[in-house]
Image (cartoon, rainbow, N blue to C red):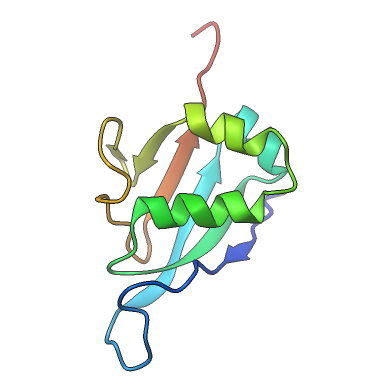
Length: 111
């Protein structure tokens, strides 16, 4: 059974009322030990066209603040936004738009 939770990132630049932005959700999917640490398969995070990966990651860290292992697992994950690997890119510069998926892939052993 897939369990999801909605998260709303903290307000930031461009989030004032009257600012035209396309809003929706992105799905953050957890794999292997990230799934175990999160206690679920995925979360939905509210995003707009100017939301960054850093904002999405901060939102899921807040959602799972009660899991002592979540932050440690998140720190070692490879991350895909859609089918695009973002390793080596600044998370504050990577856009996550409505409808996108963010895949959190911790290291796998024996592969």
